[in-house]
Image (cartoon, rainbow, N blue to C red; front, side, top):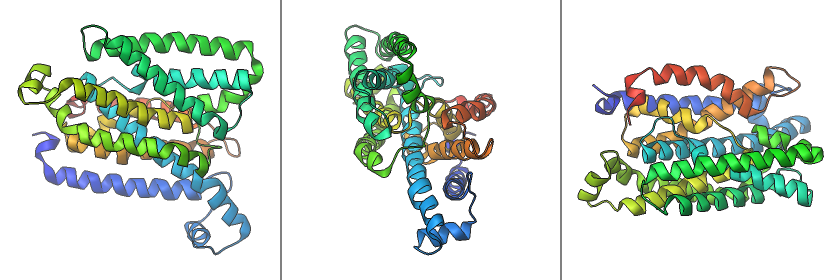
Length: 334
């Protein structure tokens, strides 16, 4: 019996994920180079306590935690969309060249215009992700092959842009130094003002993903079966491309190209709720921040007072967990 046929297990899983997410948020607010007791965090959030505690919580950790919530949710949902769209459990948003496009635009902005800091690179990163995804769609839609052609176009264009980005950073050491933290994937430095700029795009992408879920369920049986059920396959494809661009582009712009989240989270979610995209997509929005915030907290404390970027920690922590999940038959089901 699959997880989809056991509603009790699904309800229990949703509750467990919500509880773990709450713990991750508390840990993100309390732990770091300057650890705080949960009571001190509560006092700071309520406007009590010392000015130092208020600064640590409100100015440093609240923005970082909210960025982690938004980036994790966006990457988790984008990964679920890509895996359902391509019917490939190894797919992730990087296959459309989103991260490569964002990194290329940031490298150009830093090298040509001297941009620095999260606030200045958010818009070039998002614009690069959007333009590259549009180019991938134009190239991939120019012939037959559907999702496979789109993925091949994304991989090819992403590889070219990654090579150009590397050349730019190697020939301009100052540019490399300024974008190194962002390129490793980090929640440090982005503020609530930067988040406000990309949050509407992430929200629109999440809403579109939820709307596309029934059509993706039909497409899992094949394009011909989906058409026989009245699904507009072409419209679903365009919708997925737009949603992935909005979600992954927003997350990459605010936190850098964090890999692995979009690949791993849908596997874990399908093990809990089964392959129904109407459950997988909202659960991926809920579960994605757990991995991002957990990795960020671990990166703060493992070599404190220095930090390991969240993108690096996600790769180290996520690999063995993904291997374990991939061995489960229910986790592989699409």
